[in-house]
Length: 284
Image 1 (cartoon, helix red, strand yellow):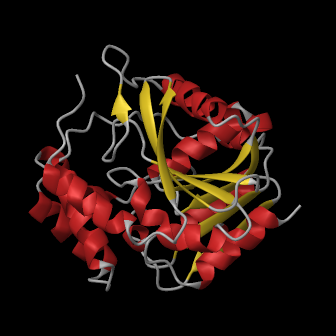
Image 2 (cartoon, one colour; image 1 turned 120 degrees about the vertical axis):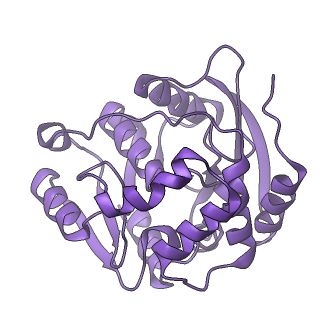
């Protein structure tokens, strides 16, 4: 049976969706493990890019990035199956393993009629994108990792400790409080903050996780990769992430986003972030 999603959550989702540029469309595609909901923007036939949100987030928060990328790319922002949003897992075939994630993402490319695409992910979405790029390198043209978690280093113990009450018993109030703490009370889109808080009530499945890629595995990464890290993020030690990534990944391009925290991304990234990503994805 489809998950029961509250009307308040769907109304909040649509309020953030309304921030997307003119010409944006939505669609639902049949994929492995369920139906996948996409928000799409940009000219048909332009180079495709898939945007994967972080855990507990939806595709809607990519609207500033889509506005920048949509001039040169066909953008598809994805609601992850089993996470908050409008994608729906199939009865009897939930995502359980990392291989399931790879199969699902490959089937999404197939459903879009794409041999390959550029991938960009934030946080958990970046972990999914990196894993897919390592597993199916011929299907990933370029890769953008936006403050990725569990890719090059572990979470900060302080971050996990602050997140524990939310993980044990999620509520909108706890979600909002955690966001205020991690972002230092940053002035973020109030409609997006409201949706983010309500995501705590979403009937989500346990996220599929796995080990970090080993340095040896990371050394095989083929697609050109851009790593963008949040200067003031509390999810992990940014310097450690950067150092390990540079040591392991050949031809890696890195940058630190001034003033950004883990959860101000992607909706409240420094303005130059979006053009930086657009330029990287456009390069040949």
